[in-house]
Image (cartoon, rainbow over all chains, first blue to last red; front, side):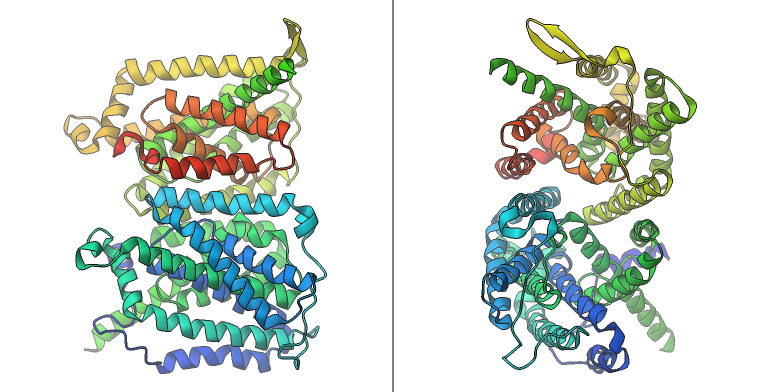
Amino acid sequence: MTAQATDVAVSNVPASAGRLPDGRWRPLEIAFWLIPVVCFFLLPNYRVLGSQILITALFAVSLDLILGYAGIVSLGHAAFFGIGAYTAGLLAVHGWHEPLSGLVAAAVVAAIAGYAVSFLVVRGGDLTRLMVTLGIGLMLWEAANKAHSVTGGVDGLSGVTIAPILGMFGFDIGGRTAYVYALVVVFIVFVVIRRIVNSPFGLSLRGIREGGKRMPAIGAPVARRLRMIFTLAAAVAGIAGALLAQTTQFVGIDTLGFPRSAELMIMLVMGGTGRLYGGIVGAAIFMVAQDYLSGIDPVYWQFWIGFFLIVIVLFAHGGILGGLEALRVRLRGRAR
Amino acid sequence: MIGNVIGVLFDGLAYGSLLFIIAVGLSVTLGLMNFVNLAHGAFAMVGGYVCVLLMTRLGVPFLATLPIAFIAAAVVGIVLERTLYQRLYKSSHLDQVLFSIGLVFMSIAIATYFFGASQQPVTLPSYLRGQVRVLGLDFGVYRIFLIIVVAALTVALQYIIEKTRFGSQVRASVDNATAAAGLGINVNRVFALTFALGSGLAGLGGGLGIDVLGLDPTFPLKYMVYFLLVVSVGGSGTIKGPLVAALILGVFDVAGKYYLPEIGGFVIYALMVILLILFPAGLYGRRT
């Protein structure tokens, strides 16, 4: 069991092992994206939770870009989520209520921040990266905390009013517009990301993850590739943060906090890294479980999350999708 | 004004020596064994709660609780090392990070469950309270006590590592585990004992630090960065490195919060990022 599990984890082969990524949409993927559409009609009472899951899923996918594809361990990814959220929130508070341009602005600001940070992150080994990202995340939290007059400090930024999307669809209490808005944006960004990771650029990232020392030998500029993907991931995280700010019309300081970065990593690892869909599956399961269990008792929730994390690290490498993948490989082997 | 500066310096030194005693164990696991252990603060928390429990429930005097805090944290440390940590010595850093975050979350939940989310009060014995006046300046008695305890512990640690048989085994195992094992050293046992010693010292520091650092379930998260920083700035392989780093850190943190309260904790995080940028290899000390 363990030997096999580590095998899968080490090579971490995506579904398209053995052939070049062709970017064709498989039936399973199309079915997967129909689930949130069906949920919209079948579970009207859960639309608020649903849009939060979609947003968190996008955030998890952005971490997957740097952790799963490029192999950078970041403990401060919430920094970019928070930057996006505060950008969109502050724009709206100060009179710019149009949502789509707010989204773009958030992405741009987060990307600039990500680009600046990427120079620090690319240097050094795992440990340095981990601590630099952690330090920058904490610094931003502290900055937002102290700049009470701008950000609202620990009370959060309220009074975020968002104009109807495209001038037609206003945000409602039931979360109808928010859900559709989140779903459409998340899907579009996902399609772009999917295209990028299946491109030669995405392949070179995987090469860097598997053997960073050999990549320069075949002419890949490792540091530049890492900076590019880090910037991209920051932009996507910024979009996710802006979506949260716009759909909830509030920005809490916890959008920047360390627990958010840690939980995000947990979701991604639970779902499976380096697979794109791993982050989405992990986020959905995590958020539903959190909604259910922390309703009973938040302390229990934290205990079990820690417990499962340890179990995953020790016994269940590759997360849920990794496990399914291994199962499928085994079944197929038997069928032959 | 000058008295003020000396006061801040003194408080910073006391604070720094606490950080040192808690983090010195981490400088072995993280610095020498290259294990990213974010849960080190949890062992300090164990020590802290043991002290509080013994004092409030059983009426044990404060000084007598400290050795028990050491032993309790060391026992927890050795049990976790044997059952969980040692499986991950060769794993990737990501696995170690996730594993130790898991431990941190569990420790927070367990502490909240048993003791509630509030700060634990501690009443120091009367002879450790108050101030003494030296050359016209007031010094807190407890802080003087802290500095003396840590100084004594540092000398003892230095002796253990440099002069005893166990110390040379530790140094040999860390330098080259394979060769050390070939020479008949039980490397696993040495690592386990070192881990226990480090956890025990953290527990002792947790008990000593209730009055200065406070004690509530979020303790392991709140001070995680400080411990990591002591190790990464101080380098590994010596006792002196982390000690100097911890003292500098303590002074900077206290001075930052005292003179620049508006930006408060910012100073320490900025210091951390700057130091890491300037010395990206400093993290690995003599390893590379």
